[in-house]
Image (cartoon, rainbow, N blue to C red):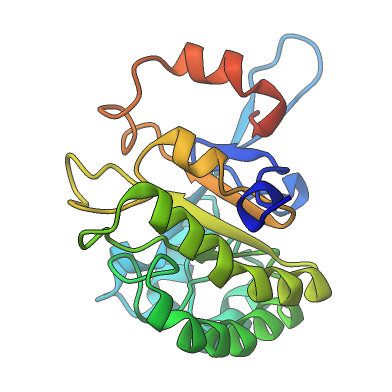
Length: 226
């Protein structure tokens, strides 16, 4: 069994849901008894409010009953959690979306960064940390997949040690993220592995997926959903 086959054994996250239900902050749904409606625990992403001081953003979230702030940097963990909010998924290395694990030359840098970031996220009680495939830049999908699998292998082992789940984000290359490699569900399904999952954003994938019902029916055993 090759490395690519070894990366096919975990489930997916749908609608920005994360791997561990206990750690879900973004769009998490709590069942209530009887005929009462679902309770939604809202969250915001830090990068959307980059110009807003963290203290002000935390106060706003508490006032509006927003429970979680996502994609925090390590120096922000303590303040947010001390104020009673959570972070369901921490930010990753500074290369962010356009450069990621499909770029073999970047693997040593990414491994060193995750060696730094994963223990800090674990110490703060954050269960997940994001990662990206990177843009294609001429790579075909098979080569990009193999490169991602190879680069993620040592990071997965580190994540296992700290009980952290890596989140590979699936984005829409036809709308907002031109050339991004992890842009369709089948590619992501072939990559998932123990402690690696995928964020499927309904908006981001809407033009690359023919039918959400078709996806859910085919991948029901691999998908986490409310």
